[in-house]
Length: 133
Image 1 (cartoon, one colour):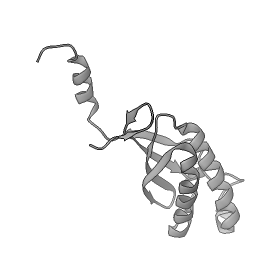
Image 2 (image 1 turned 120 degrees about the horizontal axis):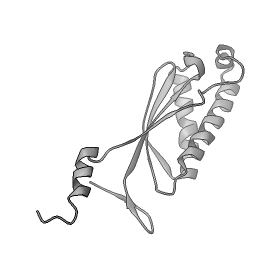
Image 3 (image 1 turned 60 degrees about the vertical axis):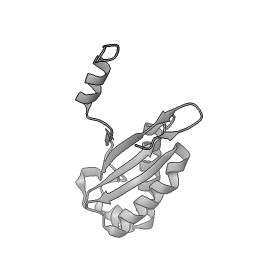
């Protein structure tokens, strides 16, 4: 396993982010998804975030990304949602017509950690510390 590092730490932090369109409106096509991805890649370096994988359905996106321990994920996600909402509605007027009021993304999101060993393996490893094997 290849780990990331900075001046004071070694880490490997993968996240799976799911963002849903408000009211599950089906407004994402390939062109809009590509634009949403471009916006993500533009904002990500400011928060020490690196996109790994991107895919979409008509009403939501799935994003796999790496981050660093100093990444402020909630601030990054809010900045991304705000910028992508504003730009998408501006650049694709048809999207704005499909939405209610000025909402683009749902207020909530799903963020999951991913990768590494299963939780049970990590628990057993921690429990066994100090024991002679």
